[in-house]
Image: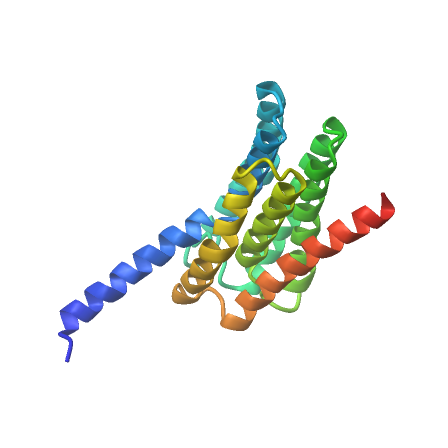
Length: 217
């Protein structure tokens, strides 16, 4: 039988590992990363990649992150994870406006289908998460990671000579997504149905947007 001290130490280590994995898969980090990888896959100029990165970081990461920090300061446990569904509503609402604004700039500046599609998918995913969150606490971590991995795989498939998108997308879906699901469950932030639901929404939304875009084109 394991000693109590060793059991507690093991539990603490698993929580730390889960925290690290959860932060690495943060929805505020993934969009700029995905757009950078796609820009590199397309061989955009350094100036074009820099403009896209600045816009995505400001509107997809910094502004929502600042709001998350402010909301957390008024939350009882001060957590950025927002365990309560109601606490997520103002954060998601502002994040949706910020991401939509940044997307308008990116879509307007870059007349490149895969960049426009990817940007649009992130907006639709956040909007869908906001609507669903009004009645059910779905995992946006899972949705964003599934969306990011799918977009990279599709981008790599459209440019078969480039491996970065394919490799990164494969790692996100086959390794990071299962680990993130475990991490969010281990941290007691989401239930398994909420995590599976978030992942499924990411896959479904990405597929639908690509299909509709291709049919419209």
